[in-house]
Each structure stands twice: as structure tokens, then as C-alpha cells.
Length: 112
Image (cartoon, rainbow, N blue to C red; front, side):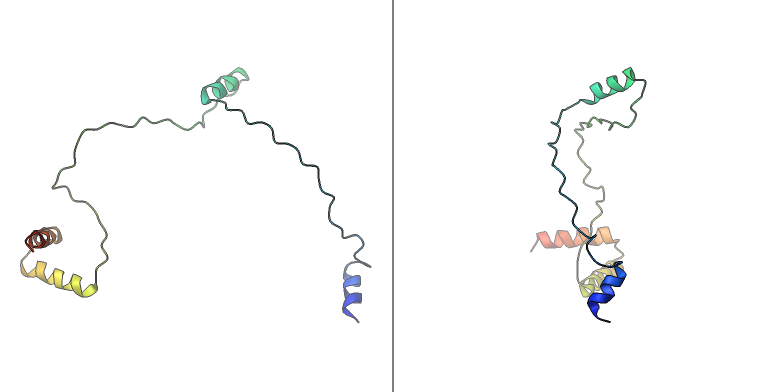
């Protein structure tokens, strides 16, 4: 049995039925119309529908407050394990928290 005859058997006698579909005529897209959410809601109400999935517009709060300098700021640092071990040992020896140890380190760095 040759490869050609095996495919003919699988295809039910041949590949004559297999042909690409004719290309469909392309339709021009409808022109885009901008409809405001208010217009959309009015139209829906006039037809007896309610629109409850419109995005909620939130007003930004204007705040003149400045963050406190003592407020902690979560951060991620990439440091070497050996450096972290030395820093941890320094904090433990001097009974500092990590924040206090970092403040001391920053103070020492200013005097370099």
C-alpha cells in the first residue's frame, strides 16, 4: 500500500472535496459614533432598560498633606547575604531594630 492510496482510503476516495472556501466580500466597517454614557442611559431608559454597568467616575481627592518623616515606607532591597548577615549582627550587638540600624547606617554614610 502506497502513501497515496492510504490517503485516498482515509479521505473516502480522494481530495477533490477539499478546497479552500471562496473569499467572502469584505464589508466596510460602520462609522464609529461616540455616544456618551448619559445618552446611552437615556436611550436604555426610553426602551425600558436600566444600565448599571457603566464605569464609576471617581473624583480624585486633593490633599495638601505631606507624609510624616517618621512613617515607615516598605521597600525591597537587593543586597548580598554576607552584607545582610553583617548588618543583622550589628543590629543585634547594639540592640537596634532594623529601622534603627538603617537610620544609624544612613547617619554614618552622611559623615563619609
